[in-house]
Each structure stands twice: as C-alpha cells, then as structure tokens.
Length: 261
Image (cartoon, rainbow, N blue to C red; front, side):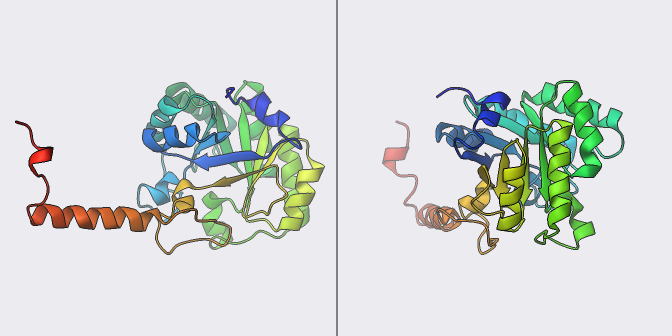
C-alpha cells in the first residue's frame, strides 16, 4: 500500500472514506498501520487513557514527544499526526511555531493537530506558512473542558460553520469534528473543500476517528454514545492475568516445557 501523505489525504475527500485511530506506543501503532488505517493520531488523549490524568489539560510537550517517537518508529504507511497539547500554541504565534517545529523535528511525525476555530486562525496560518501541516479540531475541544463545563455536544451551527471555514482559509489540510450533530457536520462537510473527520459527528463526514482504547474495550464500562466497541479486550486481558496468577501460585507455570536444560 502506498504511503499516505497530506496531499493524498486531501484527495480522498468525496472519493474514499478516511480512517483514523489513535496510538501511543510502538506495538499498537504497528498493528494499526498493518491494518491499513490512513491516519494515526498520537493524541493528547494519552493523558486520560495512558497516564491517568482526569483530562487532557496536564499533558506536556515532552510527554507527547516521548509517545510520538515510539509510534513513528512503527509506522510505514499511515500519516502520523501529533496533538499539540494545552498551552503549546495558545500563548503566542512565535511559541506555537517553535513548539510545532520541535514536535515534528524530534518525533518524525508529519503534521500537528490544533484545537480551536476562528480564534486559532492566525496561529494555523503562521504554521502553514512555514510548511508545517496542520489538522484542525472544532466542536467539542477537550482542552476547553473547563470552559464547556464538561464533555458536551456542540450545537451552535453558525459558529461551527464559521470555525470550519476559518480553518480552511488558514490552510488546514483537514478538520476533526467532535460531538457535533449529524446535520451540522453534514453541512460543514459539504461547504468546505478539506476533509472532515468525525468523532461523534455522524456518518456524513469524509472520515472517522476513534480512540483505540475505546474501540478495543480497554476502558471497562466507560463508553461514549459515539463509540463502537469492536471487542471487550479488557475482559480478555483480565482473564489471562487471573489465569497466570493462578498457574504461578499453584505451581502449574512454569513447567518443564518452559524451562531450560
């Protein structure tokens, strides 16, 4: 399969659905890449699914770089996008350029993702102007958790449409629509020329993204409405661990077959 690049991804709009999943380590990135996913996002969701934070806000640039370096080493085909964490780009355009450049340079990722609509237009344009590809993200933006008062569906159609068009004008190559009503997401998808990638935004987007831990059922009973859980891997892993504990305590493992002579 041919390498997915930014131009290749843009060409898929209206022709072929785009697939995107998160990954935070070498093993899962390799599996997902071999499965044929178009985009692998090293998301700041690493904070909540891997590092134990209650939100994505505490995630640092160094943590993002650490995980992205492992992912990039595993990937041969997919486009690798890295999230810019909270306060990595909001303070000033110059700081955003330095941080985005560092994140790509030190990880080998091929694009950054930035949350925010019209307010981030100048930042995104500045990055694009120095040849840093940017994926936008509007709707429910998790870094704005405290402003929204939680993770809530965003229903202000005209604001969302303005945000999407602002990102398009700034030069973003695609935009994630998170927790947006289907009808609004469909309208945005029809009105902008760059691909839309939905998460909780209905089937009319140009592509879809899920957090890999949600898809695999690794987070137990927590499952947002928009998640399809393809396997309950948490139960499988727990069962295996229980069997291991029992086998060791009862002298069943290791046996002669698992010993050197």
